[in-house]
Image (tube, rainbow, N blue to C red):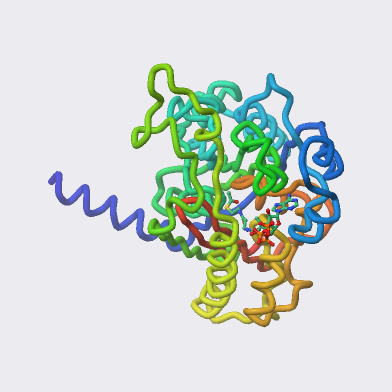
Length: 347
Ligand code: ACO
């Protein structure tokens, strides 16, 4: 009898799964009000607006006040999304925050802090650590929770405070990053089998783990009594190697995702890439023979906000009227880990 009941439940779930889609119901974002220009770096570093713009496409970044932590930005973005949808915090089943710059080292997670602050009393909460690809990983995780019947409403956010972990004396890295959070509500929806997160590709290449790291403070190289070298806790990157990796995986990954879904560039309204460097986007567009005009680019204003860059981009696209219901879009990211991947989404 126990066995039969179990089988019936599985079959019922399977029938429901077919019709159910994981749909993005709203998107919003939060960035600190302090807007820092490239020129400001010239006051304390050997750099210039001309160098930063020509090598990266970055003009500004938003920098959090010292009293602000990652969860503060995530809470603001998540609250805005809930307000837009009218979903009560108690109706949220799961909170997934993609971040590599949590409020605390390792634990507690940012998502648990967000859960408490927004009053999502029935929600599970966990962080997704996949570098700048974190939001893409988190969206696909949300889709699987929904298709598996484990959740109906999921808050997914990317939230980062990179200004807190960069070396402000290192011109190779500190000009590249900014702070921010972007969030979406992903809900179960069976009204239109064509809508929602349709397919994702998630990949990793840990052989490049040390190309982008914060060397000390973890269990490999723990803090030692009396030996404190802050520089070894800051973000360190082999920019050239990451650049080469990014151009390769973005150009090949976008084509893979299109081919495996039997679509062409003409079917896509937008490609929304991780905003790390406009030259990476330009090189990937050229290599994959996709017109640059298909790529949404807003790096000039926010710099690289890591896992927050894609949801911030989606939110800006919505408020500018660039995303309409029914549009097919493709996100693609890469980052620390190394990780990379993309989502195909019918908006
Ligand atoms: N201002 C002036 N000069 C600079 C600066 C700066 N801010 N930064 C570097 N330079 C100098 C270097 O010191 C070097 O000088 P040298 O020749 O005297 O040694 C020169 O510029 C050229 O350096 P390169 O590293 O060759 O510059 P490049 O054109 O490759 O640009 C960059 C560097 C922007 C970091 C590029 O390699 C890049 O974008 N890499 C990928 C970075 C990335 O995407 N990171 C994030 C991915 S994951 C995540 O998002 C967390």
